[in-house]
Each structure stands twice: as structure tokens, then as C-alpha cells.
Amino acid sequence: HVLDDFLTSSAGFLFYYFSNSDLVSHVMWASMDPSHPAYSAETYGRHADLIPSLYEELDGVVGRTLDAIDDDTLLVVMSDHGFESWRRSFNLNSWLVESGYLVLVDPTLEEDPGFFRNVDWSKSRAYGMGINGLYINLRGREKNGVVEPRGRRALMDEIAANLLAYVDPATGQPALTKVYAREDVYRDTGSIEIGPDLQMGYAKGTRGSGKGALGDIEKEVVRDNLNDWTGDHIMDHETVPGVLLSSRKLSKPAPSLKSLASALLAELGVEGAFPRGEEPGNEATAAR
Image (cartoon, rainbow, N blue to C red):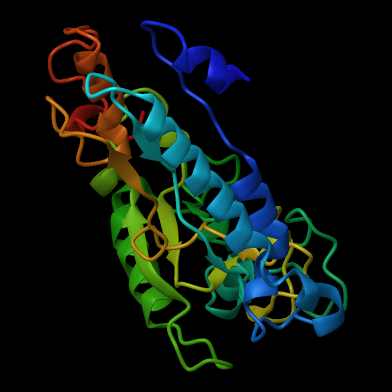
């Protein structure tokens, strides 16, 4: 109804977000992937056409809209990410323990108490927090930091190289394909210093462990994902790209999602909405 009302109006801007494609893909991706470790024919077999049929419906919305608009109306179809089967789960904190960067108070415990409660911070140099963030246990920033600021970058580079060299023993493939140092990719001048020092770019089909994201240390570094959540996109962004399509050439280039906002404002005749050099997508504000 919102779309119908807009198409009968003479002017304006409409942004409409379809959430079903994201939500359904997260929980039903295994229906398209019989090789997924959580797949069972009983659970997923009868839903094999669910996600394709959802995209067919969305494609119908695009077609219906194109039929209703004139040449002066711009239509943009965009997604903020792609999707992929989440088959393997990587616990960054377990890897840090195995590699000697995170030290346990009692490594003989059968069950980890969770949330870093078994970590000896006086001997630990790095830890993972969140799905793909790694922090250096930095003196002066962390409460019990031990790594001197002058040694931070060298330690980051060492950890990144070792992560990229790690091979999933079950697949024989790298578990990560990119590791990003924050100062190499972000330009935020506000709170960047309290953000992750490294960002993980997990390989296609692998995602960070949910338990590891909250500080749990599991027995295995990487394991099969047997959760109900079988699809995801928090991987190396180059392996799960989204789409950005427009019905005509934009007057201001939008080579990425970050630069789309200023391009759309230009289409509406709104120039100078962002200070010079501060447009979304500009290197100075790419991470804001």
C-alpha cells in the first residue's frame, strides 16, 4: 500500500526496506545447501525453494515499480551485504590461547566459565571481543594492559600473519582471507582508539563463533556450525558482496554503498549537504 500511494504521487523520495530476505536467509540457508553440517532432509528438504521464491517476489516488486515510473524517476535497488552458507565456526579466543597470546589462569578446566573469567591478564597480550574484533591488551587503555604502545603495531602484524596462515584442519583451506588493522581502513577521529585493533575477514563459509564473541574459550578453535542460524554474511566482505543497481546513470558517481547518500542527494538537487571532503565514501569519513 505504501508503494501504491507513492507511485500515484507527483514527487518525493521513498525508501523502503525489505527485511524478509535477511531474516529468512539467516535461518533457512541450509535449505539450499545439502552439504551444510546442520542440514537434514526432514527439516530443510521441503523448503528448498523458499529463498529463491522470496527473491522472485522481490524481483516482481522491482518489475512492478519499473512499469509504474517514468524516465524522470530514479529507482535504486541496493543491499548492504550479500549472503553465504555458514558452515564453520571459528573461535578467535580459542586460537589466541592455542597460539600463546591469551593465557588462562587454569588451562585444565573442563568447562570454561565464560566471559574471560579464566584469563590471566597479567600474561595475555590479545583477546577477541565481538564477532570479528581483536583487541591488543594495551597498557594505558585496558585495565590490566601489558603491551606497551610502542610494541602494538608489531604485535598486530604478527597476529595478522599467523591468522592468515591458519588452515582449517577439516577443510584444508584458510579460515581467514583478510585481517584489517584499524588505522589502515578507518579514519574516524572520534572514538577509534577504543575500537578493535584488528578486524577479522573470515573466509567464505566461516564465521566467528557466537560464544567466542562473548569471551568463551571452546575446546576447538574451529568446528562445524550446527546452530539453527545456518546462513550469514559476517565474512570477508569481498566474498559476500551485495548489490547496488540504478535505473539510470547517476549524475554523481556512487561506486559503493558509502557514497550513495551524497549521490542521491545530488539527484534531488541537494548539494553541499556534507562539508567539503566529508561526503560518505570519502576516505576521511569512510568509517563513520
